[in-house]
Image 1: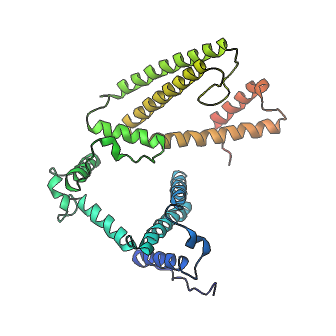
Image 2: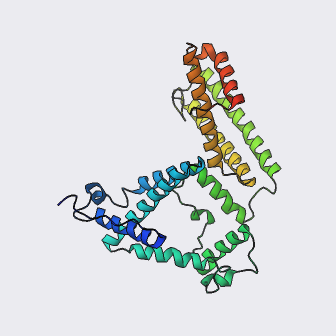
Image 3: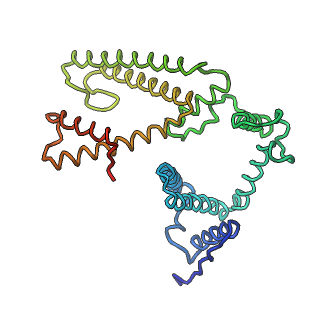
Length: 308
């Protein structure tokens, strides 16, 4: 009968609390559990896992501890739920997942655990985070035999482009393929910027030749084959510029995704402020009132105005 399941008790220690999440998961997936939970598969839950992870990161970025607690709980539940699905199918158990990560972390921390199987790759005293990462990679390659024919194949193909770019550069840098200094990385960025400007001029000239005022869609113009080729080249050059910017971020220890997220938030607050002020003053937001919008934008920028 629906609604007759007894939920696990709230625990006051981590061990029992984690066990309670597991027991709750089993109930939700049982015959008398939740129809939605029972319908899900690991494949259907992939997007949920990503969304919950992003929401947890968002809460951390806002330093909203209460929200962080909630969102990390969602990530934890989604992880256990997906692992339990595999347990039900007989592939592996939730305990196997937990044991696997414990064993892996012990193996990759020989500087912490004297019994670690990764001790063969320890090089003296490990005192910095960089040394830990270097040791970690050696253990993956030599002890776990995870060496691949191409080092970039270690980066998951499903990563978002911005993250993938940074990971590619990190991997290449480990093989010595990197700009020696930040200044040289910045020079490369300027070089790519010039090539973008040249590509833009080429597109503009092609559009003039075909009497087309502007491109009709992203990536291709739709006006002529020649213009489409120029537009695709521009797309390529802008990609190179973005890649170069990501590399500069990496060289100065800035995560480009987080940096862009901060800018997105800043733009949101300032633009919403402009929008609200223009409405208050009865001024329409269009190209004829750009000066008023810019004035209000600078006001928001100067006073650090926020939407909420």
